[in-house]
Every structure is written in structure tokens, then in C-alpha cells.
Image (cartoon, rainbow, N blue to C red):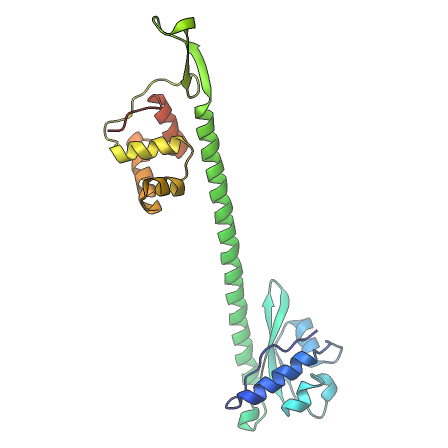
Length: 246
């Protein structure tokens, strides 16, 4: 089906509105022999002539109402499918359209196709970015949860009753103090990272910009000489997991 959506007539908006209402009231079936049927099948622009003398080849209601004798039309293509048609004519200039008009309209329709493709790609990339961000947060939370699992080890002489003690973090981590180069703010952010908080959550809790948190995280990774948040959290627990803020 061909549903006319919008029309523009130079210096005559009322006529354009009237033709638009007429087109919407009488959608055209894309039957064999129709100019627009050929356009949809070939996905190529067309030059329609003898419109009034061959009314069966164009819109049954719009063709006589518009009084056009010739027009050009080009397909708007998205993902290999015709999703729209743009038409143009020279009625206001009292002349028929020609091959140059067809080529100009074809160029315009191609520009629309490219714009639609870019918009679709941008939407797809935004969705992928959101999915990757969600996956990264899930991994961070899982790593933090692993480090919060209590482990049991033999206590040193003089420890509490039973000779056993609990500590947070995975077993087998060699004690390594955090470097003195970490600032108080960086230690605070590292502690929150170890608690499984995202950059956004840290920014809200500390009432600072998320971009500021990202910069702190970069500094933390560099000072700890690690390549990821997970490695930084591991260093936190190697330092005891309760390193006092300085």
C-alpha cells in the first residue's frame, strides 16, 4: 500500500493540505502497471509522464486532483526495503519534469538513506555500549563478592578462643600494604570499589562528578601498577581490606 503522508505546494499551503487529506483518505494499492509499483520493485527513481492521459498508472485520486502531467519519484530505502517514496513535480513552473529532475531527487533520497543508516547504527552502538556497561558492572560486583567471602585460617599464638579466626577476602593472598602515594580520596574510592560500587554509585555517595571518579580510578590503577579494577580490589584485600583512610 502507498499512504501519502505529507505534501508541499509552493505558495499554496491550503491546496497541499487538501491533497494530503485526499491521499490519506484513499491509500493506493501498488498494483501492476503503477509507476510506484515499478519503483518499489526496482528500488530506483522514476520519471512518470502522461499522467493525465494514463490515469491507471498513478494514484487514482491524487493524479486528477493535482492536475500534474509529469513527476519524478525516488525510493527511500532502509535495510534493503523501500520504506517511503518522495515525489517532485514542476507544476508551479508550468513545465514537465526531465531527466535532471529525476537525478536530483534520486540524490536527495540517497542522502536520506544514508542518514537513516547512520541513525540506526548509532542506536545499535548505544545499545551495545549499554549492554557492555551492564556486563562490566556485573563482573565488578562478582569480583567484589568473591573478596567478601569469609575464609577461616589458623590464628597466631595468643589469638581468640578456639585458635581460629575469620578474615574477609580469598585465602592465599600475600599481605601487601598499599603504597603511600595513594591519597585519602583515592583510598576512599578504592574501598568503595571493593564494596562492588560502580563509578556512578561512588560519585553519588561522595557527591562528586562521575568523570572525577573515573580520573581517580585511573590514578589508583597507575599507582597500584595494575591493569583493571579487579586487580585493584585484590590489592585492597591484600592490604587487609580495612586500610585506614589517611
